[in-house]
Amino acid sequence: MRILSILPPGLALHAEQFRSRFEAMPREWEFDILASGDESLNGDRFANAVLHVHPAERRWTRWRMIRRTAGMIWRAIRIARQRRPDVIAVYDPLTLGVMGVFAKLASGAKLVVEINGHIRDAEAARLAGKPVSRVRRTLFNLVGSLTLRMADCVKILNSDQYREWADVLQGKPVVMFHNYVPTDHFSDRGDAGYLLCLGHPFHVKGVDILLKAFAEVRSRHPDILLKVVGYRRASERAMWDALASGIPGVELLDPVPYDQVQQYLSRCKALVTPSRSEGMGRVFIEAMACGKPCIGSRTGGIPNIVEDGRTGLLAAPEDPEDLARKLDMLLSDPDMRRRMGEAGRERAMSLLSGSSYAENYREMMEMVTNGICEKGIVFNGYEAREAR
Image 1 (cartoon, one colour):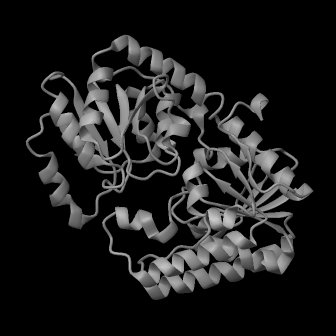
Image 2 (image 1 turned 180 degrees about the vertical axis):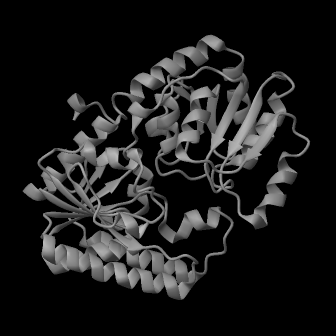
């Protein structure tokens, strides 16, 4: 089977954690990977894949974005015509989805469109505090609906995404399973006495909720620290610094390379990320692979990853009091943390592992190429395989 995979910008195309996803796939498959990034990697081959790298723009402007998109559409068409893939897989139904539709029309290949966030009506952008015009919301809906209707199969991460796009997806075959995480790369390196929150934008990750909850429990657990790691726009730094000031034990840290992310996760006491919106929650799988208990919010894809009461605790969304109760419960019970950490690692290394992802991906692709008759959610990868 030959697959053209169209991926978003900003990926570390040279990194082992990126390439290991393709190394986990069946050896008889061949991948052409189209992405924008470091052009020196164009033509690079590894495992059963070859990179087609479109140069990234050094400075973003609307005109340059349009020019880059047009160039990548034309490149996707050329690759599809030359390589004749059986399946084209795109990471999102918006810009990349448009590339996938053009490549499908040029080659006759099947099209798989992934939904990796909660994007309808530009919800994620609104939550990040950015104004979103009615024109842009309409455009998101129009483009997303078009590309999803053109898809032969849609991959989602959680059932909320299915409900968001129900008017389109109820007539489509849909699969639901986690994204690839190189779980074998993570390990437990002890407990350095800090809680960790990881990701951005801070508003979407619920950092303000976490700061309120941490301030409430810190007096009962005076030795605990809170490290919040992630990107903050320059215009937001003063606001977040003001929210954290006066709360002992809080550190707001800039983003770090992936290997340092692993170090932070491997030495934390627990991961706490009370997101307002979350497609899956990759960082929860990474923390569980390190044997760490997790606290998240009961929203989006988090309940698919964190088993409430077994591998971690789930708090009500937008509820700092409930989050404080869950924090106090976990910090007060070392045996609970140990049990949850062990159960989380077992879940991460089995149902949510990189090899489990590859098996789900193989099953999806074989269904697509063989023709899927069912509509709606065809299989749910968060269930044990024997239950499907």
